[in-house]
Length: 479
Image (cartoon, rainbow, N blue to C red; front, top):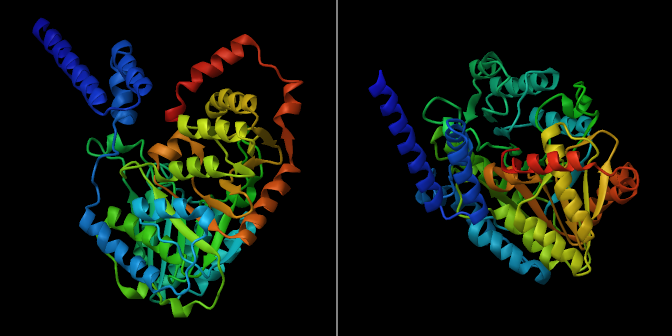
């Protein structure tokens, strides 16, 4: 028994040393490296578990081969080249080129966009488009809940599948961990191809539990697409009843028609290859540009980011927008736990005379995130960021608008998890009319919000409370 004791200690020490070497060899930011070393040293057993689940760096992993990615990208490239009279705005030429070169996010013009800030309207439109689908329906969502709305969408998909329409569904395994498998089996039995994204199975994928598909992309016949913050769950039309979460939910989602849907289609088909290992590149999934009747200069890029790409693309885009803004940047996010580059860019923009405004919920649905967020809010406000606290429910919206000529909306929160750990997707739109419409959304939301500076006069956290918030802030990368 004594030998077993020493063998166990020896194995444990070897695992800790190997983990520390892996952290050091990742060449992360010194603060992150030091934090993980301290966790491994001072939290016996628990530290190893935390590192195994949340600390491993997947940025350099090649889970999709370059050849397969090229095959999935070439169709959007062909359609991009076929565009006539494409004009790239000078003020955003660098950002557009950055997304094109490192993310293969091609800019497409001639698009029509509808903005939904109400779940009833958005899902009514989605159900209508599903009912009219002729060739295929692609659903890529973090949550596909077994509730009233989830079953309504499932029934609509089953109806189209029985009519010969190809239906493919991707749901996140962790996001849907409360959903019984029978819910998805019902769709499979009707002929729908359903896959869980990166299922958490011991031991093969357990270390990937921290890396989730947070996208909300829906594509119908390659001609109509949806992207934004709304999952398929009743809370988006009724709110939550949990005591800690306000109701109703407020969110933003976009309906796109035009060549920009090619970008949404590529994002889905890359994810599909990830879960099914099937390359889908047929022209039928990318209707010819001649099928689109809209003619305008509404330029859109569908940009994705993930923990397995070389760079945090969407985060880098946010940083560039903040640093290149001339007049203003308005941001809505449900969770404000910014990475150091984003917070620094916000502070730098404000100190350069740019009007930076941030809107977050007065109360979030996660208490830990709210405690940690307050420390970042104070830092932003001290630099001059104008912070709004949305009161009319839980604002789950993820949008940014800048200088009346650029806006973005998608699944990306301003937090560590979205920028570094999740698979995310955003539509970046370069168009004055769309920017003004998105600015109107932000300004309408301000009428339901409190100014943080006004609240400061009444709310001054005591030392103990600020200390606790600072301690919880250490968990920001995990929240």
